[in-house]
Structures are given as C-alpha cells and as structure tokens.
Image 1: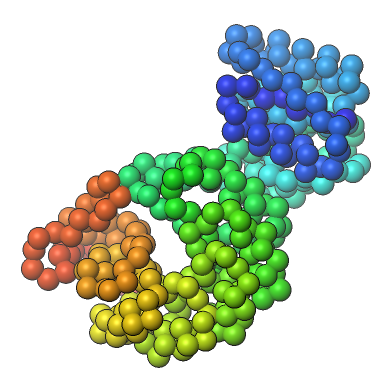
Image 2: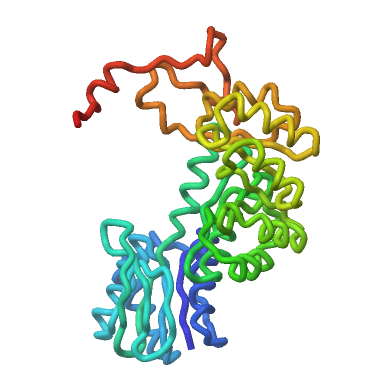
Length: 342
C-alpha cells in the first residue's frame, strides 16, 4: 500500500503527489489530506504520519516537495529510522526503489536508489507550471509554447497536464519537440497528445523529412507546425505541395531576410496556410503587418539587455514604436561592457 499526504488547500500539489504514487504501479493508494498545515508543527505532523505509516503498513510514503512537506517527512524518517529521498521527479517500484530527483539547491537531476521499506519520497513540484503562470502574466499573453521530448512519454504528458492546469483552458498551448524524435517515436507521442486541445505540434523530426511530416499531418487532428529550418522560399513551396504541414513559421536568418520572408508569405498566403514567426520578434512584427495569413508572433525578450528602448508588450500585444526604420537603437554602453576581443 502507498500512503500519500498533502495539503488539501493546494489541489495542484495534491494531484501531483497522487499521480506520482499511482505511477509506482500499486493500485492500493491511501490519501491523507492535511487541512491546516500551519496549525501544527512539522514534528507534530510527523508523529501523526508515522503512526499512520505503521498502522497501514505502507510500502512507500509520498508527500509534496515543499519546504514543509520535506520537513514533515524528515521527522517521519528520523522517528522510524527509514530511508528518504526528497524532490523526486520519477521513481520505479522495487527494492531498492530507483528514482530521479532534483538535488538540493538547484535543478540538477540525479539518479539514485533507496534501500529499505517503507521508502519515504517527496515529489518535486512542477516548476514548469509556476514558470508558465509567470510568463503568462508578464505580458498578458494569450499563447504559450512548451518544449517537450523527455525520455518517457509519461513525463511529457504530466508536463502538459501541469501547465494546462496552471494556465487554464482559455490560453493557447503550443508544443515544440525541436527535431528530437524519429518518425516512429513521433507517431506514438503525437497520437498520445492529439486530443489535448493543443494549438499546434511543432517540428518533431528532422527538418527536411517532408514525407514524414506529411504522414503526421495526415494522421493527426492537431495542426503540424514547421518552417524554422526552411532555407529559402522554395522549401515553403515544397512543404505545402507535399502537404507536410498545416502552419509555417519561417526564420529570418534562414528564409532569406525580409525579402525571403515576403516571398514565402506570398506562397503561404496563396495556399491559405497561416504564418507565424520564429525569433527576431522586433523585425518580425513589421513583416507580420503585411503577411496575408499572419498567425502568431513568437516573442522573446533576449535582445532587451542591449537595446536602448525595448519594445513594449501590453495585453499580449507587441507595440511597434512610431519611429523611422525598424525602431531599434542599440544600448552602446551595454554592448561595450559585454564586448570580447578575439
């Protein structure tokens, strides 16, 4: 039997702890909810939890990887002389328990084994969920792109669920595999996420495998997005001819600058294919105004530290300054202070 404890007031952490426990393969899971974690000391909660652990003869005890959750379980470990691992991201049942955890004080993952029974584990909160809320609120954005492609499909599914629960159902969620899969893996993973209401699934396989993309586009309901590795407008034409995608997102560096973009946008527009941008948002914002099938502007603030006046983001919109040219001026002091000589 697996014992799970968490604070009832934090439904997301409770769900994460339950999902983690069920992933260990034991159908007998008992959840113990703490209604008022601040009402008693961690030592008091540890004493109560130690009693339940012994009475129920739990094989594993799972708790939230919060400061209080780690402290409570540490008291149980000390009282019952049991092994404990904190901030775990995954685990495989057995003796010993095989697990992956985040090391204290950072985000470095390490593999470990936990000998003895019952094993005490705390689950690392989904940092990506908190980050997604921060990004959403940063500019009032209505769409968010998430990088996936973890070793296990289950981890990708849990990440999508954590982010969706955090940002709600009204925000567009795009998924990017960044050419990290072969075609067989892409087919398996894409079918697993095809009913999750995603805005698009982006570039899972090597960029020039148009036949493979065509197969994915034909089999899936979720739109396929490609294009950051188009080398000139002819690649746009070829991809559309082969029905390799539903959306395109050219990259200025590879597509041929503004001229290459305008030629590509005309090809996509004639075919009715929505066009989004990839990087260089300050320049992309201008050409999106003259792109017939303009879709999403991909925003990054990476250039802000070296710009004299970065573009403004308000209510999810990029505001182009009313000045001549592109509207960018370099912060010469910032550039000079970061210059390197070769």
